[in-house]
Image 1 (tube, rainbow, N blue to C red):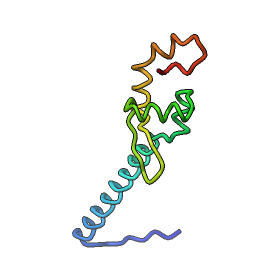
Image 2: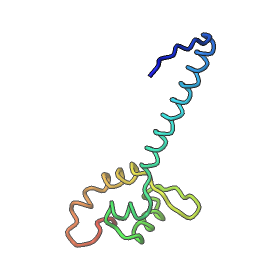
Image 3: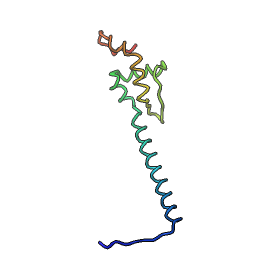
Image 4: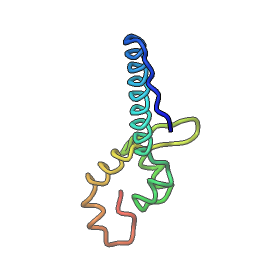
Length: 104
């Protein structure tokens, strides 16, 4: 393989460098946005995580006990919010000996 030496003006080099920096910044932004999307759960995910029925989840939403966002007809929950709710109600979950889902 033959090696070539290419000379360019300093201003052209700086412009290319700035463009690459902007591209890198955008890519990092996309990666962080993607990881933020992973932090959202749908109804099925929450029901599985909390071991509750979809009706019980609806009841928790209607009572304002858990926060949610709606996009069109689909409901999403922040994973952090669900985990916080579960921590606040840990006693209810752990002292549940009657076979119910433990959330009242």
